[in-house]
Image (cartoon, rainbow, N blue to C red; front, side, top):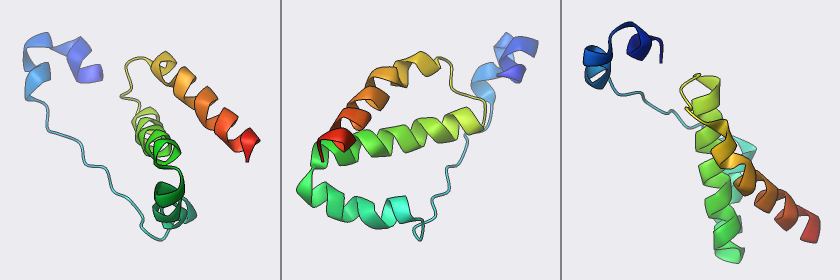
Length: 80
């Protein structure tokens, strides 16, 4: 984001970021089972984890885009 502010012409040439996933993390361990029971919720969680990583790296342009997804995840959790 800072590079875009400094030089708009160079912004498209920035190196791509890498997302590293810890397969031993409890979220990812339980995600496979959740995917067989509730694939829609599993997809929402994967998208949320990705956006969380973008927020942690301070490269998510608009965090408001994930509010409806977060609410849907919460609704699913309350139902269970």
